[in-house]
Amino acid sequence: MRSLISLAPHILLLGFLPLPFLLSSLLPLYPSSLALRLFSHHARLPDLASFNSLLAAHLRSGPLDRALRLFDQMPRRDVVTWTCVIHGLARRGDCRGALRVFRAMLESGAAAQPNRHTLTSVLYACAKLGALEQGEWAHAYAERRGMALDAVLGTSLVDMYCKCGSLERALEVFDRMGDRKDVTAWTAMISGLAMHGHVHDCIDLFERMIGLGVTPNSVTFLGLLSGCTHGGLVKNGEEYFFRMREEFGIEPTIEHYGCMVDLYAKSGLISKAWDVANTMPMKPDALIWGALLSGSQKLGDISTSEAAAKQLAELEPTNSSAYILLSNVYAKMRRFDDVKKVRALMDELGVKKTPGCSLVEVDGRIHEFFVGDRSHPDTWAIYMMLDEIMERLRLAGYVGSTEAVFLDLDEEGKEMALSLHSEKLAIAFCFTKTKPGTTIRIFKNLRICMDCHVAIKLISKIYEREIVVRDGKRFHHFRGGSCSCKDFW
Image (cartoon, rainbow, N blue to C red; front, side):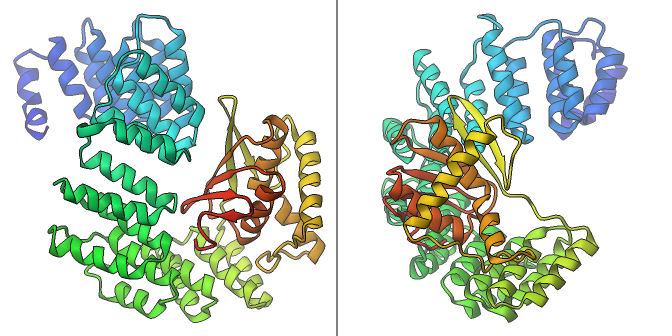
């Protein structure tokens, strides 16, 4: 790439740039603003390839609105154009936008039919959103078009199904790939089993991979170590951390050390977690201190929580996690004056708590709920159903866990605040829109709180529903009054 950029002045001097193939080759290598100047000054009769290259440059580093304006103004589009926009939007976090463009592509007619590269980007967006129905549609489309389950498409499907909460479908695709599986496919399945809490299956699959002569990479070990963390398997985690370097020659990154800190902290081995943080060859980052803080606050370890929160706040002063976790520790210990001090410090520094947000997909549409949300068109029906759910929970013996609610409210007010958490609203909405017995899948941006975890276990039993929740850490499968995490998360 550098050599091609260095040749650009000579290409300009020799007058070759107007040649379309040279222009389209150079445009993606430049920042979007320079690419636009190059395009404007030297493209006498720009061809579609040059437009696509300029579009790629904008989507990679320029403002998204500028890229979309260019897309709208293009006189002609091919499958590369559409795929470029879908890929660019998905990778830059606008996954809903990516799926909207995909739908527009399908409606545009037969001139630009999606290919396997298009579907790979669509599946990535579905995985990020938890849009299982749309991911299933993309899978069915690939099958109708006779696309083979090669390593790329197959791995994208495995990843999508895992991240959308359908582990069974992921395993089905993985098995159908046969000998076309590469290390990336194995890693996607290992990581999927880990995030769903199937820790022993995760370990068995890793050993099977090794037995077949597939060499693991750094990401494979991240999935394996996270599985050990979710299962509290300290000995296994230590073994694989050792084997990673000694047997496979893979130097641990800060993410691997973060897994070990998280494993020790969650397992109550705070001193070992400290040892890793203090002896690792690189300076601890927010991931390390966050893991230590999360584990220590769960144990009510005030001194460690305060020390880790201080380090985390210094690294990321506007990150609300450190303040919230520390507040939870103080609330748990009933030190409400200290809770108020933390809240006052947040206000002074302008730190805003990240609002809890839950997504659900019903009939191919994504619905979004925030804590206490009343913006949904079906708000009246949602809150009526929520009242019914909470009443049936109370009759079953449920009492809201209010100790970590540090707002200035009485106990009744705190219980009401808990009942309005985004995942409870999402469940109420799904109950009004789906048939009894239908599995509900919820995707939350934050770690599920203890109160919601207890409540959803009871809801799954009372209403005889399977409820799958993907929170900021892992998957929880609620069935018959219990959770797949065994209350360890």
